[in-house]
Length: 296
Image (cartoon, rainbow, N blue to C red; front, side, top):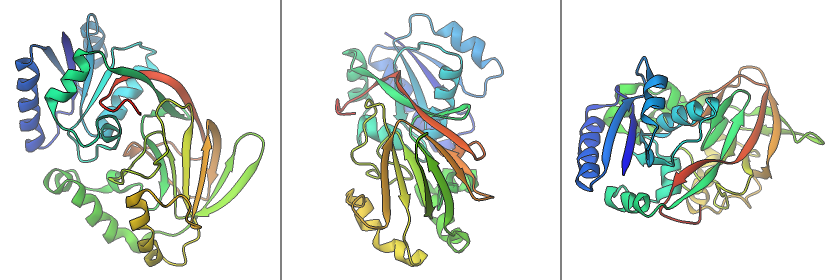
């Protein structure tokens, strides 16, 4: 069987060592493996040339690397072999949804060998695509503003340090949300539109989310007296018990239009997203993806 690994050449030294270890393990399991940098000047030509007879495409990195690959595949209208989102970046929220806590290469390759894959939903926002989350407001830009060298050195801790440093500048924003029939105005510190279950290391932000239901989960953190008041929400979020809290507005939709007050930025899968206003929709069962847990 033949696999193609897509990677970021600017990843930290530890990630490069991990890639070498994982590559050896893949070849030791009898797989043929090709590698391609996501920053290759001739990425498109090389990807299409390698596409023949592939059994899987590995996204080796975090959610940003996977987002690059998803956007490439969807915009090129390619029907690719199943994706393997191997968790090796700072944030691996989508990979956690697919593979749980497992970084076990052998277990993942077993799923590949038995052909365990499903077609999963993809989110679209304006002319961009996301596989896991679209966000705006509190903390959503942390992955964008955190320095690369800090992410390489401290991993997820770098995000938390940056979040604490910038906490005083956050404030509620006004979001106008429409499903094409009715419009709702929400004052919120944080707005998330999730395809997967988690984001930012919180694994159960949308505990009922499915990658195959043709729906996006919309979560807004609304009635908070102060930023310190958010602290009482964190235990509920960690336990996946926050959706019934009065400070949370929860919706499930397949399409929505969003506008917001001036200065609000969107982030998709940890990367800078398009400017408001936003038109968001789900592309049902658009990409094949290997999995360990069939309840995706």
